[in-house]
Length: 295
Image (cartoon, rainbow, N blue to C red; front, side, top):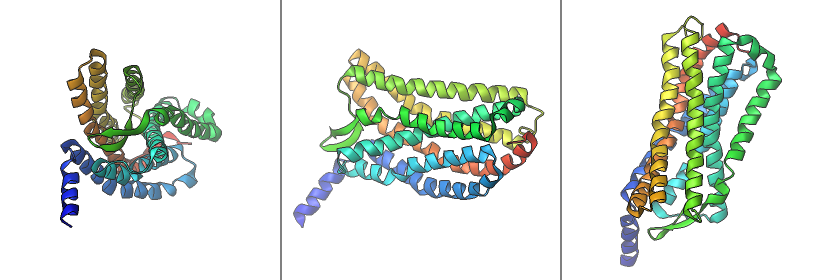
């Protein structure tokens, strides 16, 4: 019994501060985000009968956020006790995680494009039709699946401070720099598109029904702001890691990698916050879609 207690104490002692912080953040995200997204999905299910595209898009966002959060207990266990689930499950779970995260991003991009076209160029959106809307939604999920394929290659079991973890494992620094650069490019491209469409939407439709409500204008702004707040720290961490890898600064690389768990955990907060933001937007969009003739 004494030996067992000694082993438990040793395991607890090896848990780093950044892993404790990350696991705590992930636990809160799971507790709040999973029931929140389920509630949003239930709320939106009644809207689908109307054939409106906006609720379908929001439902896709809720599904992708739920898929992002549903696996958090496994990641929390891995942070605290190490990865014990095998290489295959590591790759498959990582792929599902990347797929859901990329789908959330693409959903936000598609929503910004949809509101811009539908409000400023409604005749063009009407030409798209129901078939075109289905193609957009299907294409969004298919593109997310393609963009996530690299997770099957770079995600592996890796020894970290005496424990196996399911993390990014690069064969060389070129692969590390290329992978992180790809992630940064996707973020910059997505955020640029979202910013462009919402900026021009704010400028061009001050008198439209969609933005006639100050509360709705603030809501749209908060959705975009939350995306930037919770994703930018991870991209800054990626830039620091790239710089450390290119300059051969091992101490900076170790520091940046240790903080990567915390910045990655912040991304999950976005999936946790989304259901609360979009839950309020359902009421606002119910009035907005009536004014903009949402097909």
